[in-house]
Length: 282
Ligand SMILES: C[S@@+](CC[C@H](N)C(=O)[O-])C[C@H]1O[C@@H](n2cnc3c(N)ncnc32)[C@H](O)[C@@H]1O
Image (cartoon, rainbow, N blue to C red; front, top):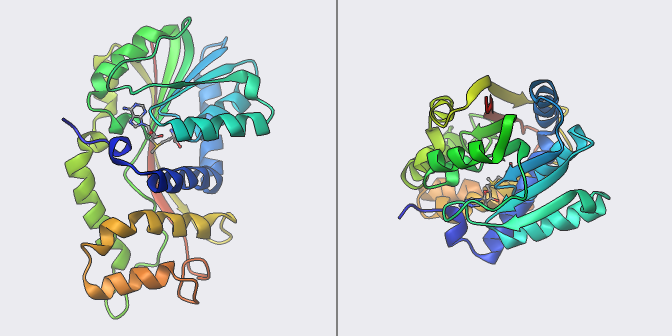
C-alpha cells in the first residue's frame, strides 16, 4: 500500500499543516492571484460549480470563489480538521452559503457530485494520491464538456535561508532539502509525475503548462517569518533524527526565540518552484 501523509498524521501534525497552508496562501498571495487571473481567461463560461480536490484549508476554494463571483464550490478533502477550518473561514468571509465541504478519501472513491462541474482545481494534492491517473479520469467524467481542470504542483517546501548559513559549514538548508527530497521520492512517488502526459492520457486537452520560479526578497510579505518558522517546525522531527549534531544545533537555533531564530532574522527570502497546468475536457 502506498504511504499517505494524512493516514499517519497526528492532531499536532494536522494543526501544523493547517497553519502552514494558510501561511503559504498569505505569503504567495500574488502568485495565486496570477493563477486565478489566468483561469478566468482559460475557463469557458459559465463557471457556476467549482470543485476543489484536496482542498486543505481552502486556499484554492476561496481564490476561486473570489475569481468566479457567480460560482459555488465543493471542497473535498480526506481530513475532517481541514474541512472544519475551511467551513469556519467560509463563514467568517461571508461565503458560507457558497461552499459545501465533502469528506472523502480520493484513494478509495470519488465523491458523488450532484451535477456536472465547470471548473476543477487540485493544488498540491494530486501527488498524494496512490493512483492519480484514475482520479484524473474521474475528474474528466465529473466535468461538463468544455469544463476546465487546473493542477498546481510543487517540488517541496520553500527555501528561506541564505546559502551560506550553517555554523562553520555552509549549505544547511540544502542538506535539509536533500534529506526531504529522498523521503518524498520514497513516500510520494508521484511528486515528480509528468502531469501533462497523465492529463492527455485521461482525455484532456492541455491548455496551459507553466513553471514559476518564485523568488521573493525584501520587502517580504508580513507572514514570511512565521511561514519559515512553521515550515522548519514541521520538518524538525524528521530532520533532527538524520542531520549531524552541528546541523541539529543550527535547526534548534533557528527555531528558538533568540537573535538567530527565523522569527528575528533579517536575511530571509522565499524561493520555491510551482507548476501550473490547465486542461479542458473537449
Ligand atoms: C499539501 S495539502 C494542499 C492543500 C490545498 N490544496 C492547498 O493548495 O493549500 C494536500 C491536501 O490533500 C489532502 N489529501 C491527501 N490525500 C488525499 C486523499 N487520498 N483524498 C482526499 N484528500 C487528500 C490532504 O488532506 C491535504 O489537505
